[in-house]
Image 1 (tube, rainbow, N blue to C red):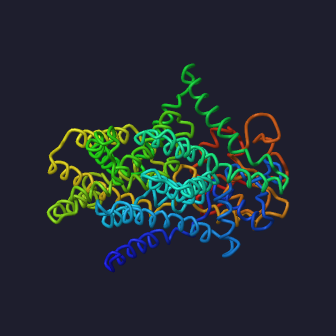
Image 2: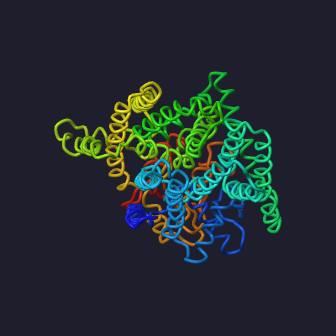
Image 3: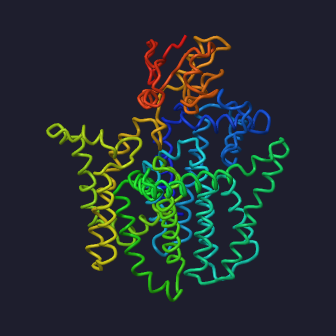
Length: 575
């Protein structure tokens, strides 16, 4: 690598670290404390036996998901100690590895298409992308740890499938990387396995290869599941080995997909297609609409030239890259779109397809010469249009207030009617131009405009996000959980219990009821009965969740006096 390229890569890595550094110490929120507690327990006794609130039996086995992220986090805690900065730095490190893997793949595997330029552009886009920025700071099973293992597995699978001859040890390598993916999560890993086997069947048209790959992937699953079973057996919880598999079939396929189909047929609720549509559109909005327009343009344009080669199976490695990445992206989108089993509020499930998306966009931009000097003269001014409107023009129109309140700039980014229309327009424009326009000048001009708009909106999103807590769902981004937890810990006795959200309970460090697990049904977890417990002294709810909690429980306890404490939480004295 030339010294100038090394310097550029170093600056991109420095940008990646610098833009995330200020958020490494943010409070844990929502589901993050569960993973942190599991890692803490592993450090203490080797197994994640955790306290998860009074609504759960103690101890709870903190293995609702496969344990790789918890094991990795436990290793970091064992070496550096437990705090927010260590946890988020560990996650950010894996995101940094994704960035470097993207660069390395581009340089080593597609040099014919200007791999170094593609790698640098893709690395820079990944470093600055709001979705990647959020995912690289979230301590979660869907965060950067899993996305890194998927990226490594899929890049290796592409290299493996594109070879004319394959050695036995290469099948072993495929199985090993497959086991690492399966050690993180099940359902998205199965999508990846499906992509690899499908690609062996078409365009490679090699049934023996598909069978061999299937055996290797099955062996990879066993390579993790057998030791994992004995690990759980050692600590007298062998049933935990199959919990995530059980949840996958019972909850995702059963309750969400089949239940959604049943509700849609009965007319009692939205079906999985509706839920899946919102999920996919939510991800598109997170990736910035004009970025998805660029992806549609790149894929449709490249596939138009690649289609005849697919039928003749005459593919170079660069051709395989385009085809395989399209399979990779398309499978994730179609499966989530069709099944809708994961709910509309979690675009973080698409973290594994960010690398191929960014590489395809970067590859196309480099190939059509979007960064030649004559195009830069248009690219730079156009990219400043939206930021300048955002800063200057709103003084007359109120545009700034509208933009900052619109769904596009909220932490949730689940689309409204306006944003859905924007997505369809962007995807339609990109796809139609790429599919039917052959004039290189028109394609270059279109890509330049799309990319300029992407950069402009990216700048506005970063301006918003860097002032907000990092989150990919409405349940994250609640400030002051640590502040409130420590405050309540200081004003209560050793046996006092509070009702709170998970994050506050984590910092409270004494007994608590998780409000998410309380119900209005008769029983030991009934909200009214818990509030009447003489040991339960305080109820605290974040302001974001207060209205929802009041509507849900319809309780007089929400009318009791509140403590005057400057935070993002309401603290209600019950006794």
